Length: 306
Image 1 (cartoon, one colour):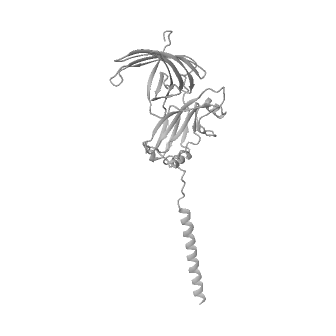
Image 2: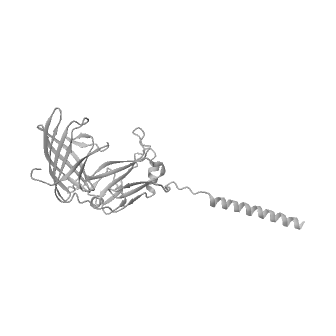
Image 3: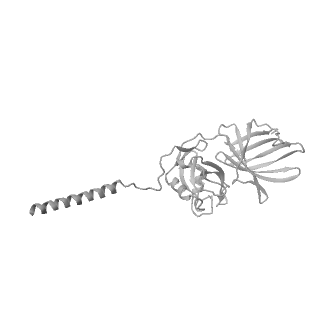
């Protein structure tokens, strides 16, 4: 009888310990979910112009990048109006009828960022500052305040990507094309079937600090008209970008057009970002929500005839 009782206790202990071992082993082996971790990916957006890379998950294969412009609103009377590039990394599933959440990156020069942090100007109506993501020797890359408050499709995925610290900055060669002094450029467009007007323009600019002044004069010739135009340019530089207003007269009519030029990294000239134009308060301004093409202005030796 005593032996049977001992055997029963031994069997019971084996069963209990076996159950406990299985329970703890299963618990330790269970996978741990982390919704904010982006797995290693071979998809990397590499921006040589501004100096950063951005890692994306595999399901973003076929992504696109849309370049717009952020506009600064001065908060002090002594602050010049600032602007700079705004890059939108776009989900490949994005359509105009079903817009997925973009990942926006604001690009500031170091000087602009210091001024922004000092609250000399703002980039949105939100009462909070943009968040610095990374920086190199020329630029600061930042996330706009309340960028995800529109709650577009798959906003959580875009949030998770940003939480994985996907952006890495690297130093780039500082641009010298927009240094102080006088600079001249020429644009030539030969007439084609699609664009039957031949256009020639001369830009004569003087840069002092971040201030730009100068003139632009041009002619256009087509099958039903030939005319000339010219006027003054006034604006400011922001890194490798010139934002200016061209006040000109054509066929006796006074006009104003807001223009955006970018320095070529090989220092051979400027590219004008040619967006569709819309009228605001009597000025033609680029509609930066739309696609743009570029016009190349070759740098030339300045002459008095320019």
